[in-house]
Length: 104
Image (cartoon, rainbow, N blue to C red):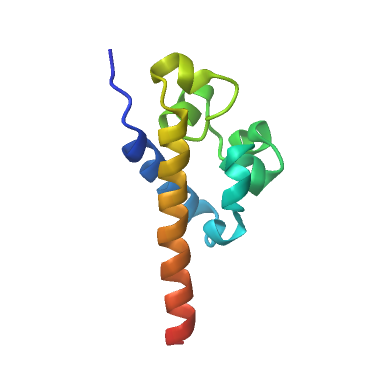
């Protein structure tokens, strides 16, 4: 059985978004992560995001995208850890993005 590592999963999901949707972190409302997921905010729906990224359900879970509807609670009781990991990745990218703008 694979042990789910929240930070690593979210890091890989964030890297994927860095590649396919540069600047994605600036489009995320961190407060809304309490009610919705990253893909819904970026693509207008979780399934729309999964389709746009050409991911299967297992990949969505492995990349930390699926944090609603009890999937992670069922898998490892770690939805709050995944949300916190997304906030960390978003903040890190927003700080870097704003520093690059000031340097230019």
